[in-house]
Length: 254
Image 1 (cartoon, rainbow, N blue to C red):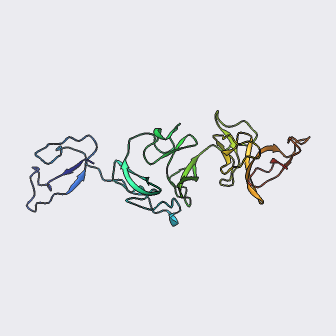
Image 2: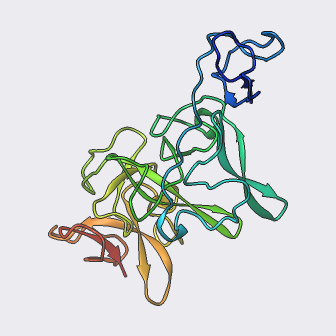
Image 3: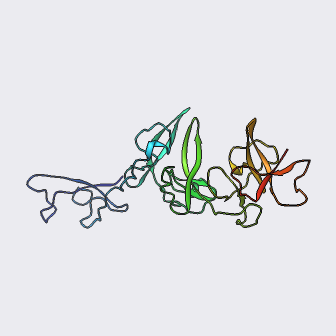
């Protein structure tokens, strides 16, 4: 981190009678070598960014805190707080940013997002606070759980609202109902087919939903229109209403 030691001001860059030498961080690109002080006379000085408020209950992550907080992002300018592996454990550390995509930017992989972000559902996603959805903004909700070994980190989901069984999502996306959000969202589809075990809504392929059962694990099921005649479900299954799916849509269940 470039730093500049400036003699306290008396108009000629000489030390003041008190000899005060406040340390200020320089904007990247400032040159080094002025009178041995390591500064340009007109270098623009900027403070470190203000960290975010504390997330209520620490619900943004349960990763053991090291040198920084994943949600507050309380590192110095030019650095970001990230989770780092310690063999089988994790902690947090301030690491240099590399200026890739910011919050909400379109991405196809993690290298297209800046240091503290992850590529989630095709958008660069920050660590977020579930109680406030901050910093997801108006376009996102804090519902994605990123697994780091035995720990979890909450991240923003940026996804369009959609109607199941209607082809309203962009290419490469499908409409999924979910217990985590009030309205179905366009998500990148998975590969699970009927009766495959699932966890996330889009673990299943397009046209399916991840359905919870009281007597077993969650499983993928085909979505169907409840009012359709004859019943559209295959293999002796019937179209049945389930929780967290719009009232006119059901799932093909045994």
